[in-house]
Amino acid sequence: MRTWLLISLLAVALTAIASAPAAAEADGKALFEKNCQKCHGPDGKADTPAGKKMKVPVWDAEDRTPEHVLETVRENKKHKTVSKKVSDADLQAIGAYIATLGGS
Image (cartoon, rainbow, N blue to C red; front, side):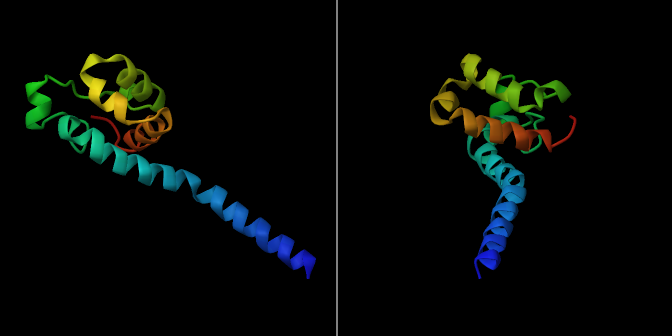
């Protein structure tokens, strides 16, 4: 009986670990849509009215990394409002989602 319980718990733990990246990507998408999409657009091309008004540049491949997102949001004055709302973990999740969008 104990062996079965141990195996069941191990299976549940492994399933949770395996699904973590997918969950982080889904969270990143929701966070992106809430905090970034208004200016950057759904694909990062910044072809929204707000993006054009603020002269937001189109992302290139180097911009689509969690590290770059974290650094840019924390340091760029245009991201001051967003920077106050999101944690570093949120920015990492946004960066992971942005990486899935592909090139510009």
